Amino acid sequence: MNRIYIFTGKGGVGKSSVAAAHAIKSAGEGKRTLLVSADMAHNLGDIFEKRLGKEPETVMHNLDLYEIDPEYIMQEDFSAVMRYLSNLLLDADESSVQGIGMIPGMEEIFSLLKIADIYHKECYERIIVDCAPTGETLSLLKFPELLSWYMEKFFPIGKVGVRLLAPISKAAFQVEMPNKTAMNDIEKIFLKLVELQELLKNRDITSIRIVAIPEKMVVEETKRSYMYLNLYNFNVDGLYINRILPADIDNDFFDSWLMIQKEYVTCLKESFSAMPIYEIPWYEEELKGEKAIRRIVENVLDGREVLDGKVITERECFKQSGDGYQLEVFLPYAEKENIGLYQASTDIVIKTGNFKRNIPLPNLLRSYMVAGAKFEDEKLCIRFEKGSGENE
Image (cartoon, rainbow, N blue to C red; front, side):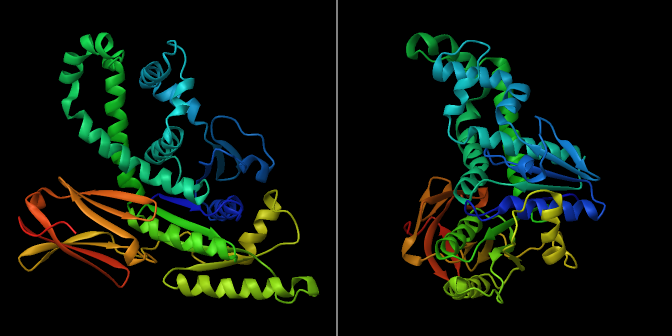
């Protein structure tokens, strides 16, 4: 089965170099590989010293590079709905889609949709994604679920509602309802978002890999990121500790740094002992060009099955329990006092830190209420009973 690998981590930890090393290793194994940048600050071209265009380009046998231009994708694949949204926001003319960039997350979501399209075309056996820094990646990965949730609430009115409201919308509210072409595109985006969710959360297809360096702020952010990624039910199956100083360095200036790094390497290993951990040395040269990137392959990746997908945590699941049911959600490194939970109509809403997730209840549980919840062993267990209990 073809696979997708998404590399993320705090800005400046070396995600692009690590992703590039995996792409070179994959191509060397004879797998048709695409290394794609979903970070708006593209640097794959810089790493491989190639000028890249708007489509994938071959840089070596079995390896293509692709720096996604979301505006180009929006113009080429979803022009009708982009014109509608642009007119709605900025009263733009028919040929303009410039205003769409004002919608937070819209450019990034089209990058993911493009990656999904490439995957379904089966041109590549492995797609390796160099993603944006952690905060942006988290927002990006949760956006398909969030947006499709809102669209599902709004679009049951369907084309009938659009047809009835369109004549009065502009006169009464100075708002144009989408025309038939735009509506078709909106429906197409909704279906693609649903497919995208299934693709990103399929543990047999998608792996999330976190890149870190042994520094306090990075360690703490890495632990939070792991918690949030599990909240949204993604499979994180690898940690890469980058830029580790050599232990035998003969320079007093680095004595304190060696002690600091040793402490945080140990912390990362203890915190992520359930998953494969890879240690990457800090090289004496800039990692630029294929030859330099191959050093990571030779020193760290060779001889290890780094491109085999692994399931590290269980999926969220509903289980029958006594006279009711139980929902279990894995939340590593969460703090009990920072977890919020409530039931909103047919959804369970879980909030931790700055992130919130709506989990739709199965039809079977629509008449059930939250009867209690407990958090232990890094797992949130929510109990439901038939029409009883108060939301907690």
